Image (cartoon, rainbow, N blue to C red; front, top):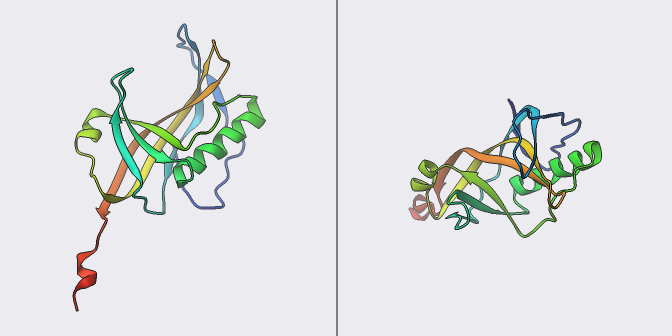
Length: 152
């Protein structure tokens, strides 16, 4: 796994993929030859956690202009140029899968640093759209308000 500390100049070139041996009836799964662990270097506090009604899985929602959102956009662009994947059009939010244990203890109203594991691409047969496969691997929370700053 390659750990990538994100900043404005982070680039993703020559992302190598391998077709997975285990496929399903909905499409093809491609794994990254080297999985990426994207680590934010700027704190964020504009997020929310929810459980999907469709598949009962947990997600954290982040703004597309966050460091994670921008990194996923750069990876998608690189995969499009290098391998011809057509990704679903960008929206205002990106959704990162997380475990139920992470969701149950996830802090509210905090500044966060995140680590997101990106491990592949799913190509859906019916639409020919590609979807990035990623999940929250870790986080660090700090208080949104520093009450010590008010002390004389």
